Length: 186
Image 1 (cartoon, rainbow, N blue to C red):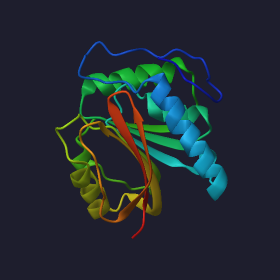
Image 2 (tube, rainbow, N blue to C red):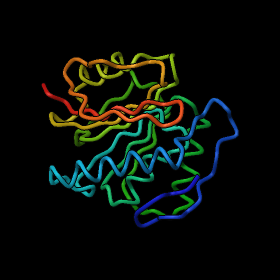
Image 3 (cartoon, rainbow, N blue to C red):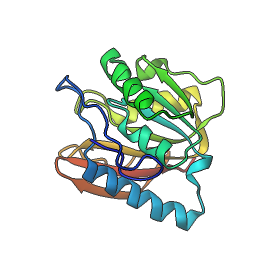
Image 4 (spheres, one colour):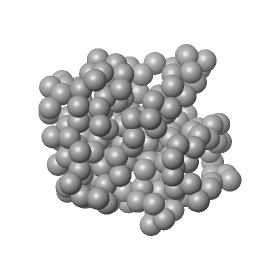
């Protein structure tokens, strides 16, 4: 695993010992960020204006990619202490001096006192947590900005046709995963 672009391009990341942690592949990260780069250019969105939630962060690879591209803040969340510790290890190995938060909590316990999240990445354990339940929980707690964008990683055999309150503006397949690019519409 490595950082694929930005200030820390090429930096190697520590990998998990726990097989339950599924790091997003470099190939998938390239697809995600190529898709976002194109969308952001079209919508005049800058990485440096984003507050990113990397939920079910695993190794922290996605949030670190955002930091490498200049994102102003990333909130790493995972209920696994091993994942949070691995994310911290990867973060500190890059000598980044950016505003980050590490939360070792269940997604249902996330609360925000500061600025609202305007981008999220969700990669929950496959087939154990329904994406809709996560988004409902976040909506009830009002942690998202009204124009929030996000990416959801789901197993290939668990297709999302629609998500209430969100528009799916892109869908890509990589290996055994489906990636949904969404934006809030309500």
